[in-house]
View 1 (cartoon, one colour):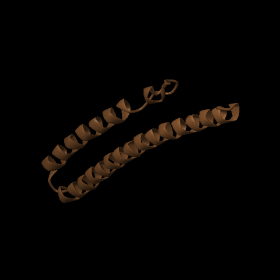
View 2 (cartoon, rainbow, N blue to C red):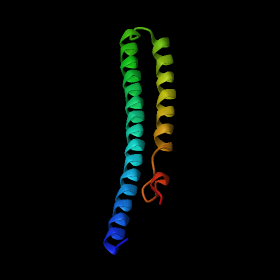
View 3 (cartoon, one colour):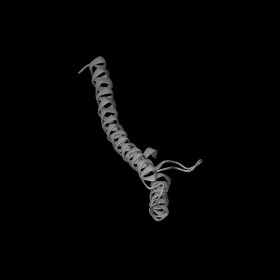
Length: 98
């Protein structure tokens, strides 16, 4: 095999490996976007439902109080989930570690 052929095969191998890695990263990113979309849609549905319940219960203080407690609980759960998935400023995201 000539030096040119060897270099060509080496470059081709490097490019192929790069495309494989890029494809895997794209698949991972696509899955993460789909998951985020599902979470966002769930949050929107929750907030829309709560808004309607507030309108429905405006003359029922006990039900409004229970709804407020439910909202507090949902808000904390959402806040905890966001915090768990958020990297603090100055920290390295473990998903991006080499």
